[in-house]
Structure formats: structure tokens, C-alpha cells
Image (cartoon, rainbow, N blue to C red):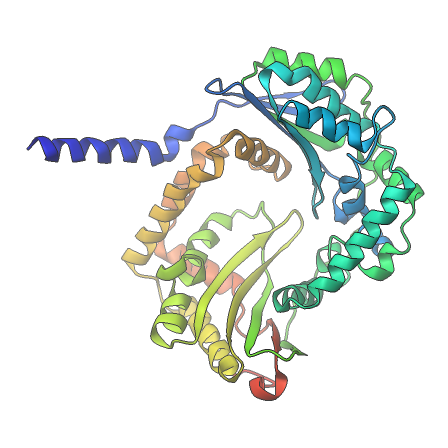
Amino acid sequence: MRKIIFIALILCVSLLIISPSSFALDVKRKMLENGLTLMIVERHNLPVVKVSVGISAGSLYEPETKAGLADLVANMLNEGTKNRTAQQISGEIEFVGGSVGASGGEDYITVSLSVLKKDLNLGFDLLSDIILNPVFPEDELKKKIERTKAGLIAQEEDPGFIASRDFKKAIFGSHPYGRLAAGSAQTLDHITRDDLISFHSGYYAPNNAVMAVVGDVTPEEAEAMINKYFAQWKNRKIAPPSLQSIVMQTEQKIITVDKDLTQATIILGHLGVSRDNPDYYVLSVMNYILGGGGFGSRLMQNIREDKGLVYDIHSFFEPDKYSGSFQVGLQTKNESANTAIEEVLREIEKIRKEPVSDMELSDAQSFLTGSFPMKIETSSRIAGFLVAVEYYGLGLDYIDNYPNFINSVTKEEVLRVANKYLHPDNYTLVVVAKEKEAAVKKRFDK
């Protein structure tokens, strides 16, 4: 009996640990005078502070002829400032066991800081220095461009990279979402140091940014750091991005790439939804049942377990600020490519026609709500998560509301969004394979 009670207690504790409500965050949000949106979460269990700064300066804002510019600006931030060389930046932060750096993106770029509480002054000094005062050294820029071009050449050997690149280009066309954030060899050759300086001065402004500070810090301490080290960061007028329209395709588009491979790499999909789409939560449940739920998904059960055609198959909606994509990805033998594609289309058609079962719906809701706290289990993840919540306008109560959004989904709604957002007649299919063996059909009919 004592053993049973002990096990019951363990289970209760486990449920409390994974309960989404137990991860509710007390977020302090404030708009500063210079336009910077500041979000703070106090966590005093460890003497560590994590900072994430999201700046609306991703590849959406660069001209097509200079694709890769936004990525270069972000990746060059810590390559030298008006006050420090690249070696001094890395030396100072490594000496205290912290980290500071930046990465590019399509919608926004991210600058991150990790530092012990006792080194908060140094951390904010470095963070502000690389955001406000980068000098983009000419020699480092040339090296960065050459390394990027070499990386692009190396990726041409990766069938997954080729399939993803060609898929994005096919569904988004000339919109920035349709090209690589890293750019191409041709566009990189047109980028100059003056381009980086101009891009930085145009978009790296506080009224175009969100800062999340999480850890062993009070709101007063965080604001004092910002007032001290970001006092010179002034707001300015930001030019909106000039974007091409994105149009849903109305026919099948089949792209084959001939490679001497034994396995065919396949992506099938079409346009999806933007992150602020109100149907996003119902789509998350529907996609979990279709192909997002690992071994429990219909695609995995049919095409791997029943047919034995793949080791892995998955589907997902990738939402961005202005649009998104729906994709099914798999690898199979060249000879079984057509059969696997037909089975994918069959499952998409099925979930559009027949309601999902009570058990499928319940399993999807349990997993999505139960795994949600893992997205915010560390201070770094919370900081990055808050930037995304603010950028996409999800609301500070998003974390509290998420379980209700998922648990209120019904079978009827799953059927509705499957019909609305899945298009088994009009899609892009990219197959990277040995063409002679794969012999991909010119058209797939129901």
C-alpha cells in the first residue's frame, strides 16, 4: 500500500510539472520613450540573465538583387564596433563565461545575451555596443561573404537543401520568403560595406525592436541597464518593406531534380497561413493527426508502418508574418516515389472528407498542451518566445490561453480547416532523385 501511495504521489507531482498552467509567466511589458518594447520576466532560481532582442530587419527588408544583406548585417554585428575589435568582444564575454551574438531571419533578426547577474553591466555594455556601433570591417565582410558562398556550394550536395530551396521558390515566387536568407553567389557579389551601413541605419531602431529580459533581474534593474547603455538609441522613421503579393497556385506544379541517389527526397505542399491566423490552433491539431504527431500520425502509420515505404515522414505548417507554407516531407527509395506520393495525397484527401476519431482528437490535444511548457522551460527559451509573441501580436495572455485554444477544438473544426487549407489538387511537388529510377509521374490524379 505504501508503494502504491508513493507511485500516486509521483504521478501527481509529474502532472503538476507538465501542467501548462504551472508555467504561466508574470510578464511585465512596457513601451519605453524611444519606442522600444520591453518585456521582463523575473526568475531568481539561478544568478543568470538572458536577453533576446528582436529587430524587424530580416530578409523581408532587403532588395532582391542584394539577397543575403540582412543576414550579413546580423552576422557582422560582433565583428567589430567603434569601441572594440571582434577579438575584444569575444575575449571580454568569454572571460566571464557569457555569450553575445546575433543571427538572421526572414521576419526579424535576433541579438542574444547570456550573462551572470554579477556581470550584468558588462553584458549590457557589449549588447548595446554591437547593436548601436558596428563598423562592418571590409576584410571581415569579404571573408564572411566567401564563407557563405562556400557553404552554399557545399549544400548543393544535400538533397534536403535542394528540395527545400526549390519548394520555397516555387510557392512564394519573387517574394522574399521564396529565396534563401543567406542569398546566392550572384547577389552576395553585389553587396558592399556601404549597403550594410545603410541597412543598419535604416532598420536597427528601438521603435522597430522588441527586447525580452529574463532571469535574476528586477524590472527596475533591467530598465536601469537600458537607460545606461542604450541612451543613444533614438527612434526614427522606418520605411515599410516593399513586398510582392503572394498568390495561391491553382494547378499542380511538379519539379524533379536529377541526382545520382538511391533515395528520393520529396516535399509536397503549398501556401499555408500567417502566424496570426485565428485558425492556427485548429490547424495545429489537424496537422498533428495528419503528419505532425510522429509515430501516431496517419502519414506515419500508413506509409511507414503499413506500407513500409519510408523511415520518416512528417507534415507541418510553417507560419510567418505575411504568409506561410504547408509541407509534407519524406524520403523513400527511388522506385517507390510515385506510390509514396499517391499515399500522401490519399491521406490528405481522407482527412478532408471524414471526421477524425475521438481518440485522435484527444491524443492530439493531450500532446500539444502537455508539450507546450517545454517551449518555455528555460530562460533563453522564454526570452526568445516572448519576442515572437510580441512580434506576431499573440498577446501577453497567449501562454495562459493556449491550452484552451487547443482543448476547445472540435472534430467539426478539424474537418473545416482541412477542407479550407489543404489542397490535394493544387500543390507543388519537388522530387530530388535519380530520375530514371524514380520516373515521377507528370500528374497525380485522384
